[in-house]
Image (cartoon, rainbow, N blue to C red; front, side, top):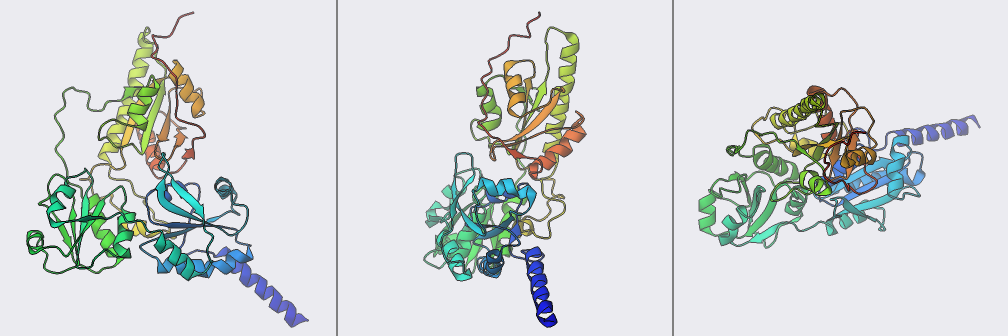
Length: 442
């Protein structure tokens, strides 16, 4: 009886150990939380599995090694993540995806909503590594454009994004190139040339195939970086990131027609909100962050005008500081990080590239209709001035709670870039304000 009891206790302890250690350490599966879920899924178009589980669930523990093997087998062409629904902080995320039993497997496709969020479908296949890997490969999108030799220059100059072109003898690119294309979707445009002619190879200085030509500057098809290394995902993705993204060509600033280089404009109407934050005109990218200062202004009073000018100067300092800072990357990579961290590395020493992602700064009069609606929409306090960071791409926002100083707000903006403190916005970003003619006196 004693020996049986010992065996039972040992089995329970072993199960508890497996549950507590699910996807920890060197696992190929990364844990997600509400703080990083949207950011992680948004930055790739590779087929993405997410396992919603509870550590005490026996079926979850049985699935763990199969899920782990599937992640390892599809490295470079798919992503495998997990969410622990037993954690109090994760329960809202699990409810958001209508998780009613464990484990629940969701697969996120490359298709996106109008807000940029990826669409999720339930995985109904066999819960074996081979079946999940096969399903992931079947969902891999074809985002590489097939070019003829005479179409290379046109492709390079077709948009402002950097380009990467595979030169191959194969009749079509394999899963590795398709996985790379999905990884860099919306950041680098990829294409392939099948059996390139001698003139193209000579022009690019390529003497063996396969080879990758990266064009960091869309205005100059004559400048290309060539990769002929191992046909493996990580070194190839690192090369493209380093040559196409981390070392973008530095452009000469356009001559300013007015002294207002750091233009913090006022939001008075829905059209202003759209133009400045949600859907900028022309080729301007939709900002990852739009920082809106809520400032009281009574133009008939000199003291109010002076306080307003000081607050706007603080917002300009935030915009200026962000433009001078290097691209944002986590300073302390998680021990449970995915290959994105390894590919992108730490770019803090690279001050030559443009700040990425883009930032917009605007202000709204707290005493006007638009200002009151902004305060209500984001649940801002009555203490003025105040600030809110809005992410139009993720449909999320974070109110600022701190001293109205440029240094403090700059640090806070960095945290918002990393997704810390950002929460989903329940409704639409809509205000019905009309231009204010001034604050009526009683």
